[in-house]
Length: 302
Length: 116
Image (cartoon, rainbow over all chains, first blue to last red; front, side):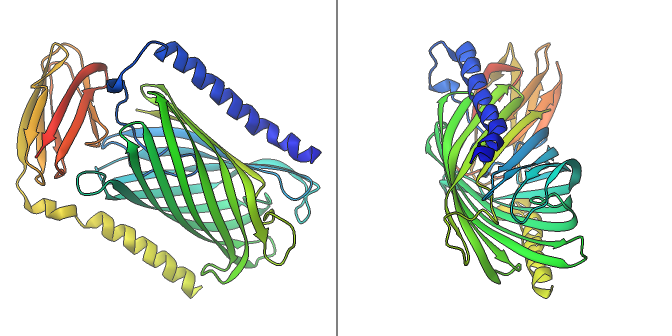
């Protein structure tokens, strides 16, 4: 437990700093009274934390971003792993968005059952993503729906930090709606993520993750959205749901902050609140999933 | 391995089909041209009208001595238009509704496209 708390510090610091920045900026810029006209339409892609909204950007828009996802805590020992995306995003049409970039990974692992101790930072791989807006919100549908596919190549295993060859193909359905125009939003994701990994012993291992999420985001002042999300994840050996190995329920807060006209920050913190590992008696699945996960993204449009 | 290849093929084919198929037969319809000007940091007219389910061409003249960035989240477009310059924005066929737009460089400059 002592070690787990140490691992939580960086993400807690990030969350606290983000909230402080949000409040400071909000007070400075919006301390005065504002009316409904100041709540302009907003893109929903990044307002729900790990859950992604349906927005695909504006035609002609380009964006660079730095996005770090951290996994914290296993059953025992100290576990802190991050994956950082250096990403370029472009919207070439009113229906399609493309993204690509490089991955960096870091691992700080000590005394975790089943994992070697490791303290390393490495170039992690490459990724791309294609998003297509299938249904737009409007008179005929209150819900917008986007499909996405994200192929990833990794040279460093996400969990163990070992040198591997990994190919992942994440597919998602993103849906969202407005409960109150420009103020309150609901988001939903369904995710299927097959992957295959060649280990250092030369064997290919296949696995897959199935996930569903729901999120709500509330906009108290124009540049700030706060909310919460819930995720249900199931992990399998094999890519076609061959052998169930465990599941997890994550719950946590989300934050989106428009820093300037062209820059924003988004953060999320998820805690595993329920789950089970197949064939094990203990609560939670800390073999396939981490105890906590956090996300921090800083993006600049141009 | 066969199952993996099949899953990837299905996913890739779905995305490709969605990208390649134009929504609502948009390509077969003739576009509606809408002129719009910016003068003294105001859209003229501030409200424009267009029929539903037809492609739209916005022809924007910037009559000010400063550049503008035409932007709209609901129209899903943004475009910088130089001072005393012109720009054309092609919009997809739209559903009935009100679509707000503004100049991102001068955010008090706002307008609305009403689609019926």
